[in-house]
Structures are given as C-alpha cells and as structure tokens.
Image 1 (tube, rainbow, N blue to C red):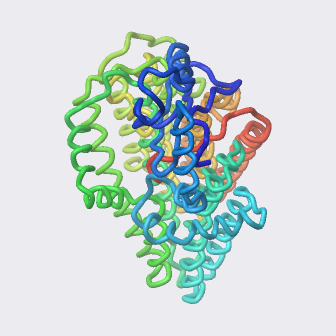
Image 2: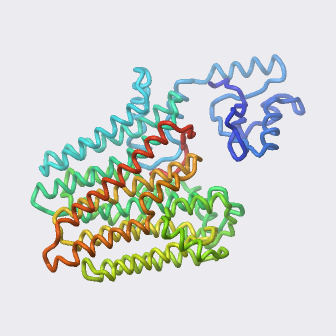
Image 3: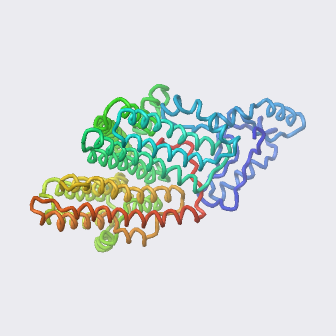
Length: 536
C-alpha cells in the first residue's frame, strides 16, 4: 500500500544470495527522520547485508515509505499517503516495467483494464493463461483451413491470444497472485501457442493449394528456439559474474540514454509482441509461404544482431564466471551418457576458447554431413559419432571461458538442424511433420531445463537426461534410423522413417511431460516473477 512498511523482512525461505526489499534507494535521512535517529529499516538492511542477502531498494515513485521520528513528521507522512491514488498505482504497476514497443503502446494501454475486470470477477491468472492458449489453438485451426476467411480469422485470433497473454501477467501483478504453476504455464504456453500456429499455417498451405511449407515451419521453430537458447545461455553465464563490464556495454548504456534508440533496439530483436503482430498481419493478407519467408528473414537478422552484440561484450569484458554459471551452462548443454564418458576421459583445465571452437567444429561436421552426403548414408552416422566425441570434449572442462555460453546454442542448432535436413532430404511422405513433432518435444525439454534453472531449482534429474539420450545420443539414433530405413530403399523412400520419427517424438514427449508436470505441480519451486527481463 502507499504507506506500506519501508522494510519487507526476509521470510523463512530467505537465504544467501537472495533479495530482500528494504526501501527506496533514494531515501534520505531527512525523509526517514532526523539525521542520526535510529531506524529499524537501516538495522534490517545492515543485518541482511551482513548475512549475504543483497538488499533490493526499488524505486517508489509516488508511493510513500518513511519512518517518521516525531508526530509532526507522522502527520505529514499520513497526508502524503492519503494523496496517493492507490488504484492508479496498481494499474500502472500491473504493466511490465520493460517490454517491447508493440506491447507497450498497442496492448498494455487497454489490457491492464481487462486485467482489472478479470480481478473483480474472481478470475485467476492461470485461467487467463489457459484462455490465451485455447484462443491460439483455435487460431491455428482457422489457419489450417487454408481459406482466406480462415487466414483472416487466424490473424485476428492470434492478436486476441496475445492480448490475453499480456493480461495474465498484468492480472498477476494487479492482484498479487504469483505461483510456481502460473509462471511455468505462462512460459510453456507461449512456446506451445507459437509452434502450434506454425503447424496450422503449414497445414493451411497444403489445404489451400498443395504448397508444402513444413520445412519452413520447422526452420522457423528451430531458429526461434536457438535464439532463445542464446538469450538464456548468455544471461546465465553473466548472471553473477564479477568484473562484469565492457566498452560495448558502456556504449549500449549510452544508447539507452537516447529515448528513440531504446525502442528501435527493442523492435530490432523481434520480441514476442512484434513477432506475433507481424505473423498475424501477414497471415491475413498474404500466404503461409510468404509469412514464413518474412519470419525467417526477420528472426535471422535479429539473431545476428543480438548474438554479435553479445559476442562483442564477451570479448571486451574481463568477467570472472562463477561455478554456478558454469554448472548452468553444463546443464543447458544437455549432454547424455556418450558425451559424459568422453568428457571424463578428456577432462582438462578450462581453456579460453577451446569449448566453443570444439562445439562449433562438431556442429559444422554434423550438419554438413547431413546436407552433403546421400540420404541414408552410413557416413552420416559416423559423422554423428564424431560429433558425440567432440561434444564430450567441449564440456570436459568447466564452461568459464568468455564465449563458452555459445556451447548450448551450438548443440541445439546441430541437433535440430540435422533432424530438419534429414527429414527434408528423405523425400518420405509425412517425414517433415514427424520431424516437426520430434523437435517440438525435444525443445520442450530444453525450455523446461531453462525454466527450472531460472527458478533456482536446478536442471531436470540426470536420469531423465540419460533416458532421452542427451543431444548427442538422440542425433546418433536419428542418423542411424535414416541409414537403416532410407539407405536400403534405393530411390523408393521407406515410409517407416516417418513412423519411427513419430514414435520417437511421442516417447520423448511423454517422458519429459510426465516428469515436468510432476515437478512443477508438486515441487516447492519459487514462482518466477520477472519484471524487467527481455521480452521473449
């Protein structure tokens, strides 16, 4: 409330490395009482700091937080408190502090009122999140019809789904309803909605004029997922790094001081709002093929921009990464039993650039072999085996080098890209949709790993990672399946390739979903409440 306590004492779960809110950083002795007067707020902040809990001092804005030293100051504080329009503050703070241009100026000005409407009728954020998912699935179904009215309806419904997607977070902030399950549903459903819509567009293209754009749909999913892995890996690598500064970061801060550059830079990276708006408009006005072409070009440019900037930052800063960051990158790498054995045999001290160079070499050999060798070649299986060895070497030492955060996205690009290439070159009916399902199942596992790490609960159990093979084990299995079922077909593609890819997708999806749902529903993981993170 406007006159809320200036200090929020640490709860039972507060421990070292966590945050505790203790008041506005801008408070002065004159505002909190007479200079030198004892203050419980200062005592709590000092005690927390001594215990290793970093005090968090949010900007209060029009809110009032003071510790009056006498009756006169108390009366003045109460008057200032009464002058605050609490409802206006709740509505303003319901909106995310940092978001994309489209979301900030085209959605949030009215979605906050939808959030208030929902709160007054007892609706929960999880219910709104579910409504957003259902709306997006209906949009995908409309796109799958392949008709112009269906495409127009799909575009409109996709925007409606995004409005609800913004509303659920604003409702959570407005009504202070944060939950572990809600954070997981919101993050997971965003990916499910977007990728289901890609599948709907691919079905719509086939129903409209027989155009096969499944390779483009899968390519869009691969590119978008790899972009997210770059974001996650970079952020985890630098989450608690020390000496974390660089000339590139300083230049970025200077650009952010110029208002218009902030919005241009946020739009360039195609956050979820801009991306979905572009997809919706192109769906309604053009064809699925054109929609995917523009999406792929836009996401590729955004990926180049963000990755290049982060590489420059990493090369020019003298950051020292912690054991926690190294472990997070190792978990994001998703190494299976084969890479684990190689890593143990090749264990060595950390090297500045050995890990990303080794990972890049393995990824290049794997993808080049899948693209250049005949479909179903056993040489591709040999290439996958070499990739497994190089992948193990890449993670043999703690990932503390300046560019080691590139290792997980390189592994994702290698695995997803190889599945795409093998399916596209197989010429087997239904292979690409089956590959789409397989990559979607594996991507869900990788996103689930990210959300667990961000929630402070660590990676999924090692048993789960071993059960689904790790990235190197899965790609070895897929290339072996291609060699067995395609190599002997001699120009007559074997339908068994589609069947086996589908079965593999179902097995992986069920395995990771069961464990994921069990964990998020029953665990005591903290709710992830991100106010200032980059828009997804």
